Length: 297
Image 1 (cartoon, rainbow, N blue to C red):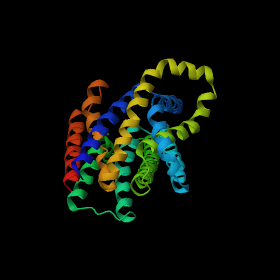
Image 2 (image 1 turned 180 degrees about the vertical axis):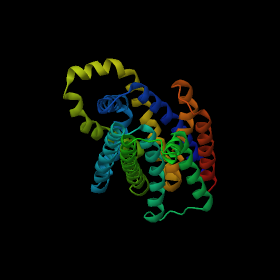
Image 3 (image 1 turned 90 degrees about the horizontal axis):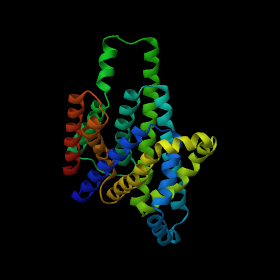
């Protein structure tokens, strides 16, 4: 991976960790996604519309179809993730989603897009996936399952979490591959792809916001500050990743994105008061080593 692409991914990871911490503190649902989507459209209008004005005349049917597919996949990913959190514990859904997503993305890039993966790159992917698993607390679940300290209700929730977590990872891989194809092979501007995608994603989530306007107004008063953070930082983070995909193999960029878990472990552990510091720091170290291996491989 070129050093410039690695630098973009590292900066994106820091921003990604920051806006995810803000979203977690907000405790929002699909209506929070609509809030942040609307703010994204407004905040980034000068940049997004300027690039769109210059690029859209050169688009054909392929670019428009990919834009629609990207927006749908991003939205369904978010809704599936929320459904998984309602059906099971975060410590089951999240590590499976974040661990399987980059693994599937890399596999598709190698098998279908013709990318090459060195042994060092494969080791790097393994380090990133294992690090995400440790940070998310997956090892605690394995210990409890091995000792039989699970009720039937908890076992049912874990099975549901496995299913929803893997499904979420599938959609992470799907939108990563689709967006990567758009910026690498269709020469789509990362800024235009993300900004116009935000219009479509917001259109999908907006009905949930309008269904109960008094409740939405109350949530807005509580969550608007966090929504602003997401609206400002999230597009920058993802656009940086898309630019990295233009100059580096997708099979390297996709798992390297999980460096955000390193920053989240170091920052979130203090801000959110989360425990298991040793496991989280070990996971963070594995992600750091994995990303370094990807950069060298």
